[in-house]
Length: 157
View 1: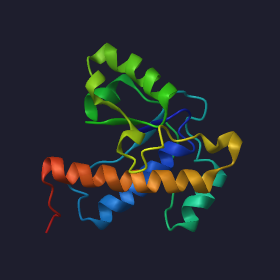
View 2 (view 1 turned 90 degrees about the vertical axis):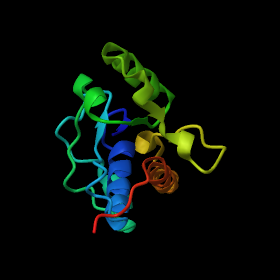
View 3 (view 1 turned 180 degrees about the vertical axis):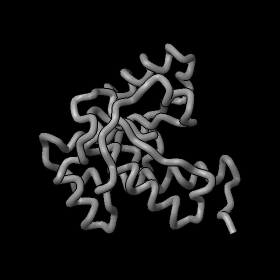
């Protein structure tokens, strides 16, 4: 599960990109992909129109997604909770402690091949959607590679 603040920009983009990568790799039966936000401000809303437009430009549709809030149950259900920045990581860790699942929370940028990226910037106010797309795309690719190696995943036949 990919997590950002309100689940309308960064985490739905990561969900869309990662789901597409998983599908193209033939790993749908092995990997379930979702996203949420630590805040509930946008629950039920579509991703931000600017993020949907950016994703669509790159062949990724976010149209079926609706914002949801991270829940205690998510820490039990999902193997990894990828936090988009430090504040989201901190909030997710506070929630994870209630379930004893702190080890599931990982900062998304830990997998970014660019060693200078420490978190995914929130494009909501800065309007840097294309830059965020670039970061999220390369990092999703690295995460998938790591999961395939770690779990020795092979495509379904």
